Length: 500
Image 1 (cartoon, one colour):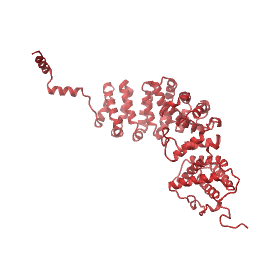
Image 2 (cartoon, one colour):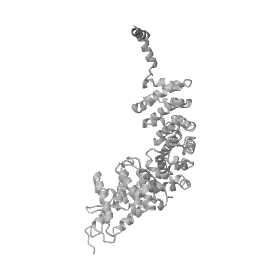
Image 3 (cartoon, rainbow, N blue to C red):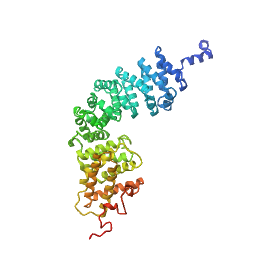
Image 4 (cartoon, rainbow, N blue to C red):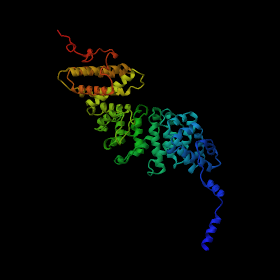
């Protein structure tokens, strides 16, 4: 009876089915959808109800997380003002509500379409202003605000405006000063890491670079790469990785940053990394040293020539390097500027190979070809390639034997190539520099030049693979040719004349 009695008691305490359903509905969290976007916005704006703000921020985060990437653009398209509401929430709250608002803003700032939508003066100022306030006032959440700013700065059109936002760089400057020596993995150290990521993107812009140079940001960042012996543990997106990119980008604006590199002793910091470290970190330091005019020959590593030549080859082939960098990470203009520095200030013999020369011809030819189809604003890779070739030509053309038909043909075509570059060069100084290369080539035609012939043949094979005709430099630039080569560069006996 006792057991039966207990069972009866249990059965008697169970609520009716209708009541059970109501209780389940009361305890199950509501699942929001995009259709609820206006309601969520109002919840975010209700500053008197912190719990509602948190609920709305959490719902928006879940609607835009990695499992719902397609919603990110749809949310902004449906309700652009949701960004303003999230900014209001993160400024008016702390703790979970702020954290979830920042996570939501990070998700929404990833798609390119959203970045463009945010790049109106009003929305940009609202968003950047809110994020800067978080960086300044909340060490635990500053890293998320920096990530959101970094995401926005991937849109090149808004980089200068972000950098010029009142107070941004001073706030980042203070963050780095205080956090650069903080314990790894702490909120402050993560803030430093992602602030460096933001600076990586900002430093690509010339105006932003000049503003960065007026702060103590660079000396602070250099503190993060003082131990190159530990570089094997430096990973992509580490603070060290970001710092090296900042130095590389700033190097490309060296004429706009005053005495920054001497003042911050950047070359001294980069030299041991370039010489003793392997992989992409060494490459970034090497590229910066190649570009920096203040870096002496002794600071440019012996392997720089082959390392940068390999990078140029990969860029032209649109490929990366396994476990080091992906295609598109480095620009051709960066690599050719570094190669120019290595050839003119370093050891030119390290790039004086037929394979490297063929890459230089390929670069020049691609710009000449492109110029026939459209206007080109920046010819620097082609002009740098011409300067490198001019520096290595004396090494490639060390010969005293008489020139044969192969040399004459190769020199003729190469002279036509550089004449075409000279025609499109933007100013007198550039035209004169290319003219010196043409003159040196014509002088080289007096003797047999097997290395030049080898370089021209490598280039010819590359053109063949790319479907570019061998008669590329022919009558289109006013030059008579036959099967042997351009006639104006052939001696009379080769052209069928008799010298009396």
